[in-house]
Image (cartoon, rainbow, N blue to C red; front, side):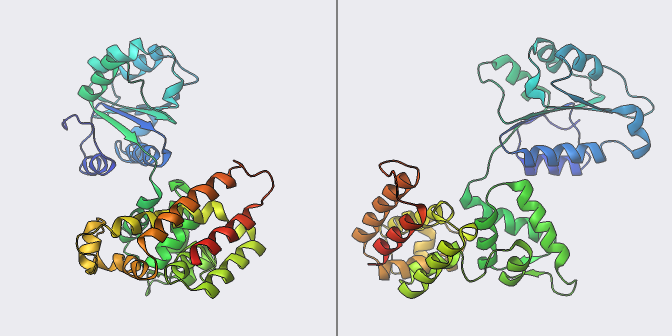
Length: 342
């Protein structure tokens, strides 16, 4: 039997792919993508196809109580090494006393998968949590932050032997956001569209498959602002104003805020003349990623960056209706860009 653990997604998948199954997987959290991936893998691989009819059961927490789950979990497998019991919507099970007792002494021949989405186990139930950890895997699936999306995209494609450039990565992350189920679906769509002799995602592929403009987007706007290219920045803002679905203040403000926040940190680098030193100071995986901050420190003073950050906070508040009864988001966007560039 594999060792019980409170593990990462990668660790869980590594053990499962090695054929190591524990008697309990309690999968919880606000990001359904990882919960579904783990559950689907167990459903597809823990049993042979001919064993599933009698040894694989799916229940829903809104339809059963804890005692019914426990009764099903205590059954012995029929002509198989194990049985698999998947409980979806486990958060809807009201009384959990019977489950806590089961977790303290689970059946070694049962793989029980509890899917608890949109929340976590009540931290006050210490015995409950301790029993889960000792019996198997307690996994919290957390939403990815925007800054983590590029790495997710790159790793997802790398596992499928597909390459991607930085601009395409940023375009995808910005246009789709942190909905990993949708994001993975769009990535799969792009992979299928690629010719087998050229497995590379480019801005043109992104534009064609996702529908985001490779020339007028938040990434290009940020680039124009970094270079202080007033003409290009105003071109993009005008495009957004005429095509609200292509972009708005709500989509590009976090991107710009993240840049200027990091730019402010870069000014405190012990050796801000060195791109390698700045990259290390900003905890970037490659010195190449710091090039925009080197340009930014040449085009903006530290005082101006502080003022820009304050202005962004003001515009963000106004975009949410605070002290702003009438100004539309398009005008707020123009006001911010003008302030940054002048």
